[in-house]
Length: 319
Image 1 (cartoon, helix red, strand yellow):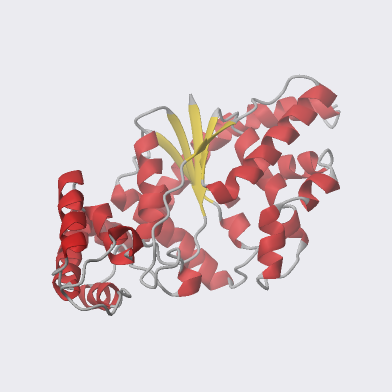
Image 2 (tube, rainbow, N blue to C red):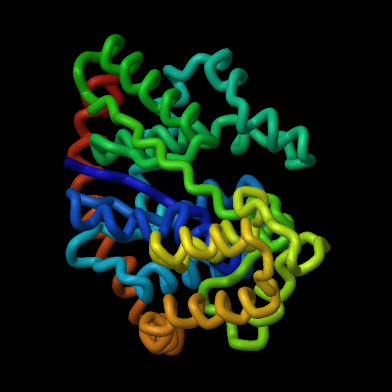
């Protein structure tokens, strides 16, 4: 089974990225033929600073490798290193109904939030479909916010197959929504400035964790753990028994938030400490990271090119 998943290089990666996408993605290399990539073309719809995009692409790749992505067991690459994806994007765009894209919730939401209504943003689902169909992916793990885009990819695969003959595998979605709250209680997001970084220094980690917003109720007042974003973050780093015990203690009252935050700092440090040395090693040798990504791109293109050659034959641009 071929599994495909990607992440945008939108800045320093945080624990919301880790638990929501990175850890599951790394785990997929145990389940099947994993294609994992940095989607830097997609990032251009909201990030148009060349130096920043380049730096963040390399940083995201470095983080993934440090956290355990194995380039021998997975195909790990950068989207822009695969020229075939842009050609397939154009071909799929020629069969994609405008009405299908106009119904994209993500496009409407992003424009409503002030993002420029560019052609790239509008046709984002077509490029995503090209990313998926080019490698004949069987399974695509997505969050709830990307479910509709995966449905569009399926629609385009079916429409192309019906028009030109059986060509693409119609991918299945695996929807796994893990919402990690930020320090202010909203979904953890760099755009909200409420993140806890994976590889921050000790001082920054302390500032971020101690800044988690809590209620102002008296110490002895019973608390509802389901309404506490501190509890929601803490349980990510605790066992089931520890989580149940903390929930009981909160309901009884008497839990000091300052003590709990200090314990959380220790747990976050312990979680990522084994990977920190590897990250420092890779960060000091960006050439090595680029070699790994080039190796992954070579592997990816060996799969992409036969698909594209078949597509060219199907549509008649190979003569």
